[in-house]
Image (cartoon, rainbow, N blue to C red; front, side, top):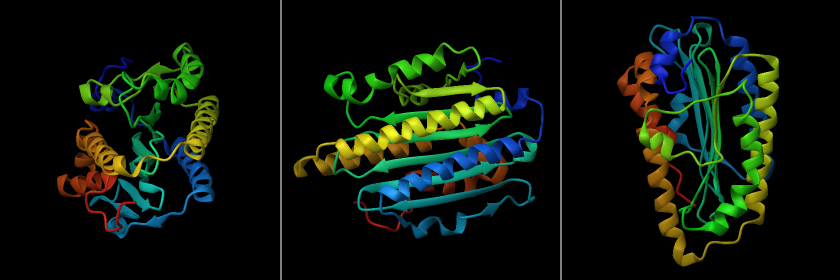
Length: 265
């Protein structure tokens, strides 16, 4: 399997199998992280996505949920899934976008089945890593050895997007891989998820405060990046195929908070 194939090509090339069990195991990991998050952060549901707490395609085959939250320290939290696990494809997000009180990196996470297991974990930077070397050394250098473990492991095939912005949006210690479904793969993904999220929480707790004069600009930068990642994702076409363009567009806006009700921190 080529890691440079598009998502649509990957799905078309794979057998149509029941991935319900593997989806359930991955979805469970997102709930484990959610428990850690709610123990640390105050969260409030955003009513703009209430209609998508649970949704189904017109033919009843594809389903999903999109739950979004805000908080005093959180600009936008997404906990979602979409797909048809009985026919291979699922995708889920647990992504935490921080408020501008600090410039600690955001937490990015996506997983799914195609039916091969797909996973993405990264700390989304708030600065130019080519310029701010202290930031690079503080938040990204510590993960380099872990990144090398996966990169050098033949069980994991790097997934390289064909889209230039998607590639640009992943840091040099971001994890984007495909793996054959197995209990070992689930165990490795679970360990990585908790390792990354525990590091994210530590980064937040130890981060310095952003000067008041810099917070508005940082918040706008965050929003620009979050919207660009959601709008430009080539996988959006799969959502359109499953749910139609109108609903898919609403779901994409939900990923970046285009219809949000709650105010930003």
